[in-house]
Length: 489
Image 1 (tube, rainbow, N blue to C red):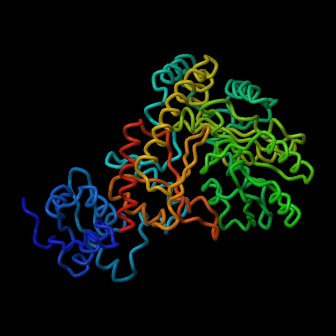
Image 2: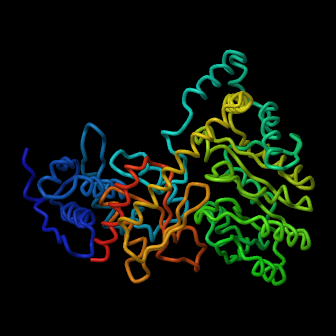
């Protein structure tokens, strides 16, 4: 079947506008002018790509944009059809900003877009903060699930204790002792992932008008949680050792903040690990000024050489550190199991809020994880993961050296999953490169998303070095380098 002449699109292959945007605009014009009436079937993506002499991904991306903006409806096996409301919609108001234009993203929109693209077989994504699917312990965890179901039957499919399964609380307490944290199960709350634990703390402890300190850049979900909350955010400078304590002290004197949020171990997005001496100084400073610390420690298990220094919670001379951790980054992302260890004075409020929100993980998953941890499977799994991560970080470093422009800089973290890349300041921004990279079937996390409003750096980007085997990493970085060159023109 031939492609109608309506789709003889004159593409500017050397212009600033990406090819998929040119195709998209041409089709929108045909729809708005009535040349493509409602229910018209568009050419298949492979067919149109061959007709235009472009990569199929370019057409797939254009169709995905049109589908997201309600111009067409695309269904696997049926094709893509013009929607009968498209012309009326466009006449009433301009289409919403594209989620593929990263300058328009909020953290929430980015998370949705990032996870959607990560599931596409035609996209090689370095964007998500999730662990590698090929390293997940499928067989060992299946045995743990089956063991729990055989032992407990339908009981395990019922609602469980809000605080968490007792066996899992005991297993977490034992693990905390290995982190040099002395804790009782009665001070733990199991949550539906570490993100839920962070949300629980921020929504329970803070009130409108409270002042909060955030490391800068920081975890984008926390930026999203605090947006439009009425909470006053102050950004703390960071360097190669984490947040700068002189700046923290100055902000404490100026604003008397209620809480400091940070990830001292393999920070997201930079990968920085705060040294022991600075950790000790920080907890002493916070204790002197009655400053609560919210410690996000979800990457602790993923060290590559030697274990990181103890958590801030283990070092604190006062009971003022709220400790958050979980198993989504290192073991079971789909199970959504996190936990928090609360200071004595805050436990009752957090427990009550936790019960109201009902955000505990499922009983079956909790018991299966407890079984898995009790049988010693976790340590063997982590050895396997760390060995793979060391190989993948080396591959990422080699690929960046081989393919990216000479002035590119990047971190070599000692753990976690992220490499923090700085593109040449004289070249295109990370958001501009992203659009060209998507056309080549590769994605990343633009760095501006990790900065609070007004403090962005447009030439940084975050890559998850752990997501793909070495060969795929080299292929993806080659595409990224080509996208940078295309964006530069």
